[in-house]
Length: 131
Image 1 (spheres, rainbow, N blue to C red):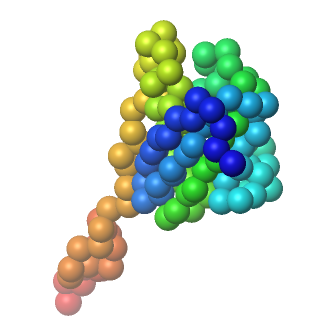
Image 2: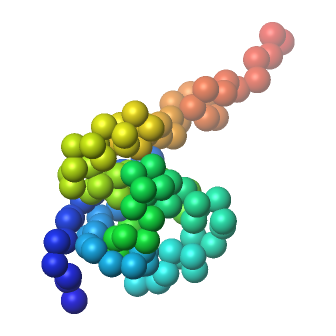
């Protein structure tokens, strides 16, 4: 059921990976077989998904079918925004310039720091006792 003018793209955030197929349509976003509103639930994340499209003035112009794995809902939403932005940037150079200026094309590489041996967490130390 892939439509004409389909663009495939990948986006990442934290440990989440989003693979999308974007095609001309009515603005519907499907994530793992469920609508984005039902999958993410919070209004903030739904608005985040629409930001790249609002930046270039293409709201309700493209349909997205996404497969998202890893991480939590917030990281998955960020990965989906990154993938959609990359797909929109591949369509037109003007889109790429405005999306890059708005910061949608840069990958957010912040991840949880690993726990180190000999201490209870990444930075925390065991309590020091003099005696």
